Image (cartoon, rainbow, N blue to C red):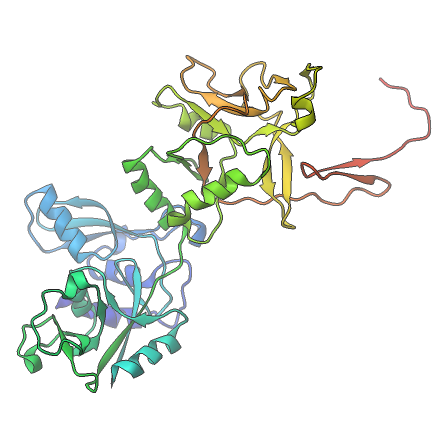
Length: 426
């Protein structure tokens, strides 16, 4: 019952529309004696970590498992740590952000309208509240109890639920509309019970929408993904995820690796595009720590790779070292950026020949030392790493007096000027 006071406290901050943190989480933190532990995300929606707070509940738990179970049921956010005892302490994190006026519960945003209306009217009402908003969906068994904690003076609300939730309902109105009876007296039911009622009946409406993906939520999910598959590598600015399958460089589609990564990371990024990892020293250090003896392919390749060179009878070592990576350009076209001088190469690399045996690059984790990039055959299949943040590149205009020369095949742009006066080369 005490948690119902939360909504009263929350109403005090509605006038201040916060978009860089979740206001309902902040309110709950203050209510449950966690005010001094509250830490908002440091960089708004671009932060890799969410808002954090440690809640103290006046409840006794005696084991780590019972404390964790209590925290997961009663704190509708991600639980980072549960500490048993009196009080039971729950260290929680809100990675998503709801709009002001909407309460976040278990990753979704809710708004109560305390007016009685039919189910059909309620559906239209939610659509009018926000694009994409619907009648609340009971997606876990503990949600009705948290709804009861948060919202006062509500007897019944329209809801939806899956068959897994409703399959054991005992009622005769099998074609009726589903409601959550917070006060079950009218229906001869216990409090906080689901039942079906005639479509002509009225109830209050709880609207729901799914908040957009944030960088903090993405990184939380990637961390959990890394606990199941290959460990996710986190650096100061990015997260890197290893593919479970092996692929080779696509000679026909320069954006093939980026397209592959967008599909791989879609569950964590939504519709935001991903890209193949751009190797850095920090990333290489993360890859080479306690990793199995395998080869990781990267999307860095020789900008001089051509089919004509592959089939040429004269094959020589190239000293151009024109190795780089394709970025999506700001005009929609791909953009080749040279990385030949970055401190990511093994000593003496890259060593390029014209036969396709060295146009790709990779990292051999079985080497004893100097585990950095080296030239690798196009024919080799190997896993790649994908990164979460998406970078675009573009060339600026050439200086006055210079002419623009585009290498359209690989997206490079050069600026040249012809100097007619003789100059002494020093």
